[in-house]
Image (cartoon, rainbow, N blue to C red):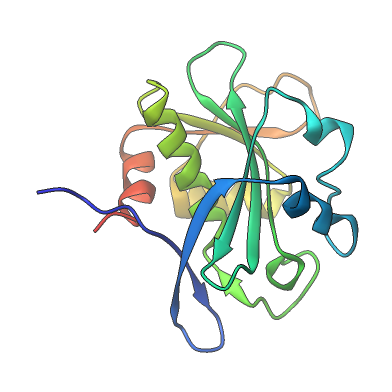
Length: 172
């Protein structure tokens, strides 16, 4: 029996499940972030050639999120360098989010990259805020890991059951 992998987000207004395709981001995908987005995805930091930049789009072509991924320095996980929801769904930019489930989906994609690259589904990432840090631990069962810089980003890891639980959300 073969499993089908289908990423999706939930439309807040209707509760509808919106199928999403995640593909390599093009320059024109990144250019849209120059206005209205939290981060400019054409900046030098994001242009780093080590990063695998991905765009999550609905069938309509609407960009729902962007993600940047790379192997960590120790070669044991995929590090999710950045993930960002479209401004209409970004909780730091709007009170009424158009879609939910974006972070979970972009983390699941990182887990897929980790599996595909032989890292067994292990992903690491930093929480941008204390609220996200708590959310990742409580809702995703992420585990806090070593913080290289005191007061720096709070790093988390997902592996084993936690990673499996998130990834299996998108398998049918």
